[in-house]
Length: 147
Image (cartoon, rainbow, N blue to C red; front, side, top):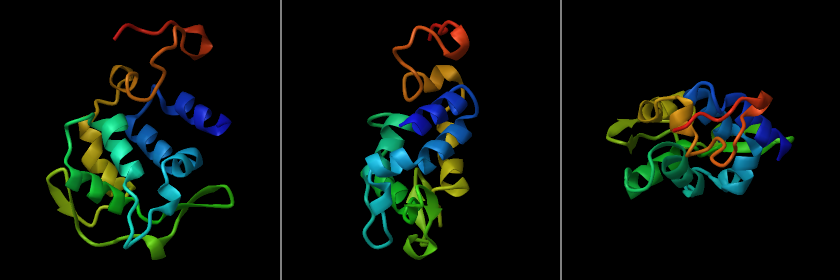
């Protein structure tokens, strides 16, 4: 949990892409949202759904087909020795149609390139989704700006 909070502190006010990549590879998220069980031929949609609903698009702005494609994009993302590990043997390299775009998307740059344009990468966009929605003070004593 300490490492997860450190990740949010490090990337919560920075690059939207870096935050999404960090959260996607975070051992806590892989465990909590069943990413470590997401395998080719048996994709687990839990992380893909939360990625679309909580971290990027919001409820009602994606389809169930988008959830299935996101799940397939993150197949093979796993843990080894307590850290992120990409298992190529468990990744679905086939074409996926995701948010109207078709390609052999993976959870890394390919998949994030589709998602990043939906967030403006600013604190104001991220605060209600992942950062610190109920904090009065940011790290180092800076006040939270009004959204």
